[in-house]
Length: 443
Image (cartoon, rainbow, N blue to C red; front, side):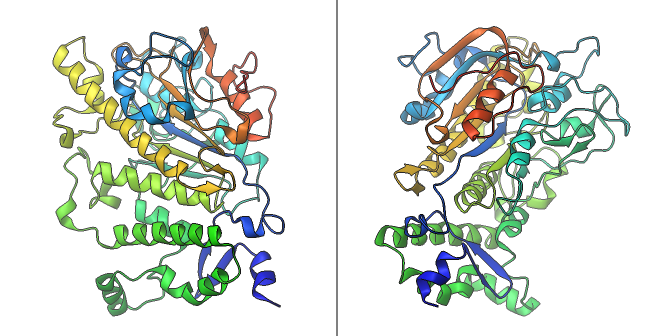
């Protein structure tokens, strides 16, 4: 068997119990690998935004980029701004207080969650899991769930609502929220294996001191592969390996000098050596690698739990995010909220940049993805759930006509967008949550 036949029959190099998946390669596209498929990512932003700096005054392609979204200017042709979509089921509807729990619990389920702090929780299958169920078995992981904050499902977290609703946006069924990974190193090792798992304590110390890489263990296999692929694929593999090695180094060299002053509560013990901006970028790096290597096609990230009160001291912001969202129209609080909004959008811009740099044939990974970024609360001071701040990035392999500001009829269900996204993903569903009709994303 020659090297070409060997590598065309598998997409994973395995050595010493480790696995390194390959990115999409044109050399094998007509054999083992098909055209790159659509990926779906959902990013939850807690507490809403300062709406006047988020929503453009103009509809269509010629809108003026709002102040909070300035960092996205160079990608304006790669995403849609969406206005007037909302979740009626996130409102109290007779259940009283608890809008933050409903915002996270309803974001992807479009269901009225049951108000309980006991075991009888009830939400609904989330949309990300609807997509994941349609492609079950195609990837190593049907879906991957990440969160910047840790937290369990037991207890009461918001006005009588279970912590399960506050800490989760992905639900396998009405009673089962999916566990999120809140440790970046754990997330990385789950995807690519622990590069130190087979080493003794002394060897681990030496490996860290030398900043050794999992890639060193598959070097010979990589060289065999490089001899049979095209020049462009060699460059692609080298870029991928560099990105993987850089991530490993980031995990290995974390030190107490990088302790995060932004974290207000001790829920980040799994990654206490990572600052918030460093951690969120690493999660975006992990998701990029997971999508690039087809480890999964569906992923979610919570930038904070429902009602998150993280303090972003690196921005000069002393109060917690949730506290600031109750701004009462006080100028000093609004100014700090604006800083946090811009901060989250800047990191989102970083993610789009990462996706766009990954080439997949004539397209890039962003072209072949759809990334929904936003909140299930518009204004944290009012706790309203209509006209949500939402961005849909990516072209869904040509199924989404990106660029511009789409303004829908008031009170249009967000579930209608989910139906349109299911079409773009290639697995159309006819009904989800409180949907009334499918939003056409290709026009």
